[in-house]
Length: 290
Image (cartoon, rainbow, N blue to C red; front, side, top):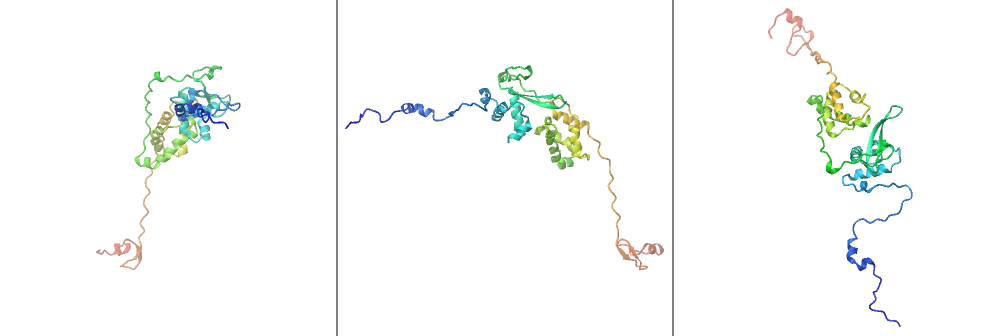
């Protein structure tokens, strides 16, 4: 009968068993279980997926846009219909991508004369490709980024009466926030909406319908990009303010109709206040003391 060798290890030791310190150091953090893609994939640089300044929403949206086939709509409305983040957050993420050179949006005129927005996705900001009109702008360097210019104040708008401002505030706010449905360039911030709302209320209290106000603000807009849509709306609210409605005198109160009572002089029925005891004929014919 064979005897066991007491110096031999009971089982083969793995690299982790032989070096317990190494095993402890690699139990946390991400590990990758990768399979090579052969279809339906897109190559995206780590400069985007690990960007130090972009928000997580902007990184994810940038990856999604780079994966879209050419010609797929990538405007705010289409993206909001695809994702649940909403138009405000999606618009902010698109602005981040534009700032860092991953996206460029241009308004171009089609051969039929229609104005459309063209979205250009740049997978490597700063690199140029042919044709020349598709080159991607280089993202600004953080160390040399110029100080932001102070925002110019919006033009003043007409002010309504205090009573009208309270009663019509929500109606004016809803009208302003709905302008983007008529033109996507009229997407207003909360600050711009609060500044313009009194001007809209001033129109509404002059007996102008919301439809008329909306048409005055959205009709005949410039075909080019609007640099400051809120300033344009403030100018229109002031320059096109209609006159106040004509003065209408209050209606005269209806005449008082007194109850019938009997004359103390001739027993004839007549209408008069309770203080009158005689009809008009008796008062004229025979003076009496009340």
